[in-house]
Length: 317
View 1: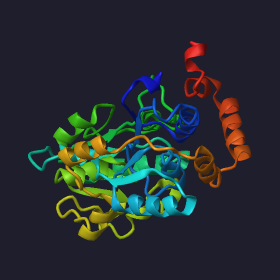
View 2: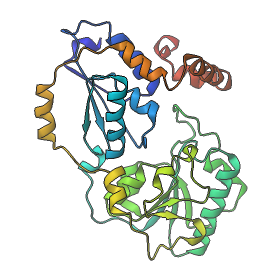
View 3: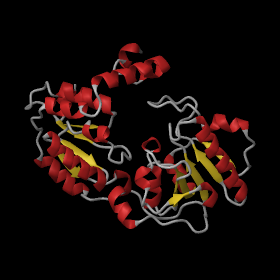
View 4: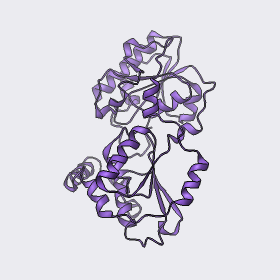
């Protein structure tokens, strides 16, 4: 059906992108639309996330770090997409102004993943709330009980909190990010995208470093950011300031204006992609066997969510 449009903007997972580009390669170049892909959040140079999008005509990048990596991949794998450094779209409408005083800890699905790490985090947040009884604290949930998402929140803070007596100034809530930002006076997280948006709005941020740095926490690129904190040492009266060079690299603001981008779109035409080149690039990261085993484990672990996240969803329901 997508061939009947002038342009298609894709913001989906890596697997769906791969299937889409396979189908798209079968269309006549003269009849297919312009394909644009982008990144909904922070990827910090993740190879699979970048390469899976490079079967498009245009790929929009959030920051200089990812853009530079993509340009290297384009040459290495002889891909024909046009890479554009666009900057974070959320920054285009973000402005510094009045905000609240509430301390927000931003939950992330699977970060941290282990139950004991999430219990540790909860205990530290309880200790912070007790240390600063004059301040209000909120754990902002990423997933509520009845939400259906790609990633399952196996150890929800709201469930873990049943083991503890929470201070009266600490709440666990699920609300929109827009509402949270209106109340927020400090943003605390392991690696949430909301850290970037909060900083852009002039809200102090802290990247929790208690558990160390690794890809599993998606926080290794925060080294050098200037805003790393440890729970026991957080000082809300004198928050840390992000390093400007780090921000320029990883939290790139508007690079191309909307008018400039619209003019560019009028000049770009659908490209004749070599799907095999694209497929070879994507498969160089993760073999078909590895993908199959990962999907099979997901099917065994949680069949309902497997089919919900499947391309066969519409046939199932």
